[in-house]
Length: 235
Image (cartoon, rainbow, N blue to C red; front, side, top):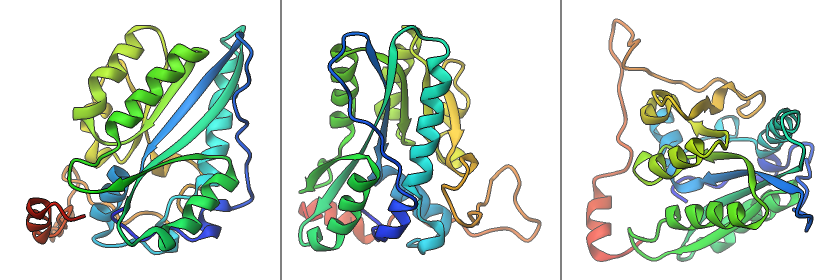
């Protein structure tokens, strides 16, 4: 993860249990997958640094939103629908003790976590997210897919293919970094800040379409030193 991990309270909130999937052939999933490295980077770019507690996403609020989305889709389905949410993240060497409380809090809320060692710049979780979506589609079937990521290069085509097959697909993220989803005719985009309770305080967002007269600073997504780190294969 590129930013400080949220505290346990940031994740847990009131505690919402997202039920695990059953074995019934008549049960379909409403699947949410969260690309933690990508969204950490996007949030850091908006804030210009590491977020404080007020600006960390609250996964209990996200869980409630997913439960509501599942109830909404249930009205269109004859099958039983169950929500399932998974956070995909990288664990840098030496950071396990720092990240562990965040991972445990996510699991306590009802989110599964897929954690992968951050060995080099190619140790991303995009392929793992896509494989999970494909597995769930083959398993019991999908009644809906929600992908929280701004990575259009990895997700645009697969998600558009799902939408073309008649599966409702939503992309969660920050509109500044997901123009491919905002402009899509087949994908529905939901800005994370529009989900009630996900952030305690309004994000200090700057849009190129609505700049203040005095101008605004747009911070880099990562330090220049990351170029050297990538060449050396160090996380």
